[in-house]
Length: 297
Image (tube, rainbow, N blue to C red; front, side):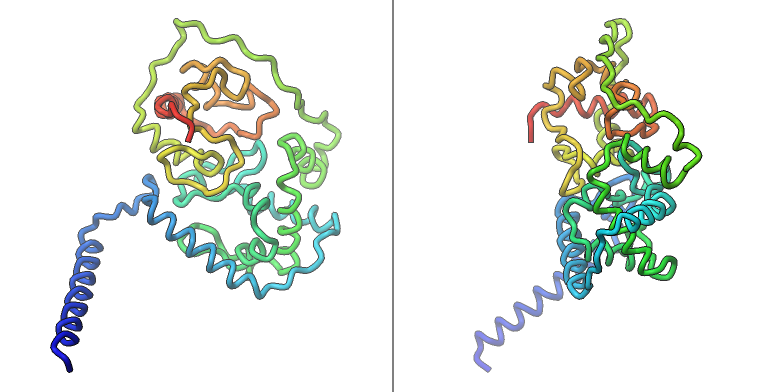
């Protein structure tokens, strides 16, 4: 063996050993925060997202998609969605259950998933689940026919407004409510701005940055500097501090921001943003963080 080849081999082996030792030291040091109150770092999130997408795409390529055009399939799928999916993922105008808001990674917005994912991939995820995300495998709990019915409903989901969703709910899940008047969908008149005396004290911006992860804001909105979903169903929040109005209705003041965060449907009954049960202090903290977002991303 030539001397330079031997030297190169020793160098590569030494570098590999050093890299392995460094990786082991990093793991055993406990440096990486595994708590569900802190998201993955942006690089880690990107790597995991690409790996997840490729894993699903490769395996779903072998799935044969049946016809999904029968309206009854979507109706049956909606009933399953209401029974098993909305608790974690929410729906138009409907918040997830409180336990789901503490999951990390946060449950995806299925309106967005339905818009961008092929039917075969949605089927594969529902059937097989996803490791270390809280997404269960339904293969052994409901039939393949039922899974395809869920996929059929997912094709309808992006077309439903909050009022439409309530109509489906009353018609197909709670028939006794079908005779009730349909929920009002007209935009409420703009409420008067809060008086200066009513302005609340803004909270802590850093606490707000963490809190908005726990209320699933990142699953619907692109937020500068915050790791979240790649696609979004709500408006981006970059530059929100400079907007004149909140949701096009409320003058943009700290008091009104807190009001909006705590109960959006009370301000605009037609909004798809549900009441997420945000506490007064958390709303103040989130508002404080939002007012640091001066520039559009």
